Length: 242
Ligand SMILES: [Zn+2]
Image (cartoon, rainbow, N blue to C red; front, side, top):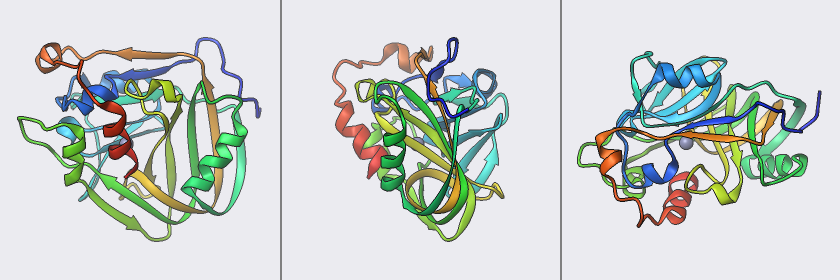
């Protein structure tokens, strides 16, 4: 325990890629059952950008502004990043710890910024600010415009789990550079894409991956899309960290 060396045969599995979302390809391309077969842990977004996905201990939830529901196996998903999470590193953390302090801490623990990490933080939080994207209508706008509709709220003292990934900067556009974390409360009543938080105390767990695989969508909209003119970096930074 407490090694952060990647293990052979372990890989991140991603469904679609972030530049496709930037281009407005929000049509669900994969069945939820395919996503949950590929991993037990992860993040994603709902069909037509309707909510934020949390895959935790094999159960898939979608967080929307009006609450959290489970995702049926035949529901369609436009984007997800998942792994079979078997942490090799755990550590107890005492707060207060803000999101940026937490990220600096994890940065100081990992052996390299050029690998992928699944990161999970179970704990009690003073606050968690979450956003949930809202369902978009055809014709879809790009991600940078679509997230202007997002719902944002700050949860008071809450117990739950932050989970997601830290990815290498050079994968920006295929995946998300640096941290991408979603929150789900223990009572499964609230959650979303994490914008900021303050940890009171909790347990950090991490697994490292030296492999990354991507399934491409086969939707008509993807097959016909022109993807050579996407200003992804700016749009992703805007969407993920505003
Ligand atoms: Zn997200």
